[in-house]
Length: 85
Image (cartoon, rainbow, N blue to C red; front, top):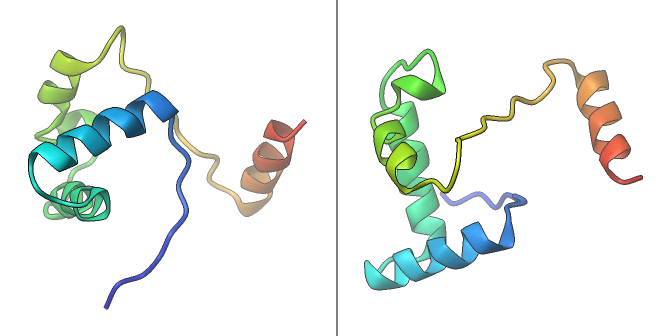
């Protein structure tokens, strides 16, 4: 069963991801699903443990910055509405 979600990404990142998906004859949705499946296939404790992190370091422009979301519902709401200002 497929579930729809809404995500926000940097336009340049999405453009490159679409090109990558096209070159590999896969939809962007399935590529994203594949990456999530890889991330959740084992019990990784941090982003650095992911097997794709070395590849990301190689192709990233500049230093990789991981953004963590607030853990509480109120903090997420405050951050969301704070970004809209």
